[in-house]
Amino acid sequence: QVRLMESGGDSVQVGGSLRLSCAASGSVNSRNFMGWFRQSPGNGREGVAAISGGGTITYYSDSVKGRFTISQDNDKTTVYLQMDSLEPMDTAMYYCAAGFLDNWSQAAALGGESYQYWGQGTQVTVSS
Figure: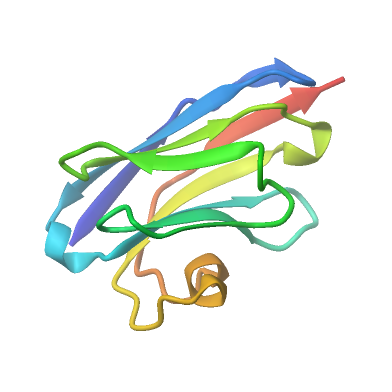
């Protein structure tokens, strides 16, 4: 069992930065990937970034590549999403997810369906 708690969401202006955190508790062996997903009203869930348990593999959606950075601390209990150059399109509820993925492709890591554990979300609002 893995529990996830997101924090760091806020309201910022265009061009600003935020760092989201996801604190994970429970068995590290229950997960080999962690990801960040977002959803805004009227839109489907979008995989934003994902990182392997060892930290050697990272994936980003095209919409955030070059602006967002996913990382984790050394004991793998916290995953971060550094978000720079924020745009109004980044406004959404951001969710952290953890899972044991059999398929380590980008499609699987950002697809969301393979993740077993989800946090409650943290709101990010970017205004112009």
